[in-house]
Image 1 (cartoon, one colour):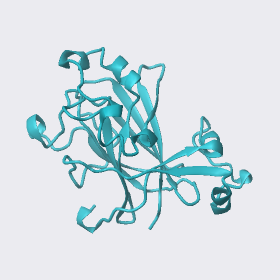
Image 2 (tube, rainbow, N blue to C red):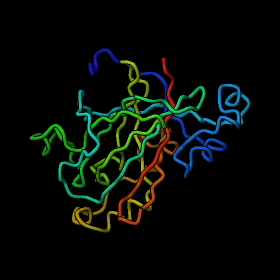
Image 3 (cartoon, one colour):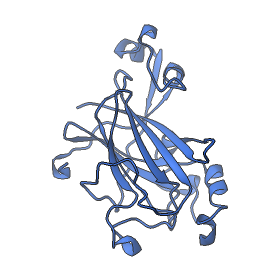
Length: 230
């Protein structure tokens, strides 16, 4: 994937109302009998709320590996990221979009930079969406680093274009609970929470992950991202 050919368009959407129901526990399927499509979006029967794109930050590395497990054995609370990509104009799932994520490890370190410079791959990876628009990643709950709230970076690529660049966030109360345990607890208290983060304040509340802990002790984080195809 040649990043020099990519342009940024589109934006992240949070999906509510009918779409949140239709995309819920049944695996995020849209019920076409309810009129999902451009007319339904225009009428408000299907609600997609656009939010601003956010900076990719200084730690992006192009041409990441196509893989699901991005941990490379590094410690941390297990996290499964479920990123769904839908059309912002029809709210229908988009198949074969490339979802590109990167984030700090539990110690707040990025691969390729600073103390993580010896590796350019941990906590980085790309997955293609399936027919339901789902890209799935196995990772760990990100650590914090000075000056930023806890987050995951994301890009969505479609047909050689970057159609979304953003950041995904966690509820502060959940992060507090996770950070009471090792390896996070040995680092001391983080210095920035969501409300004090300068980037979060520009649309971050619409990029909050919905997170639940499953019976295996894995945090399952879900987000829906709506993009324009061109």
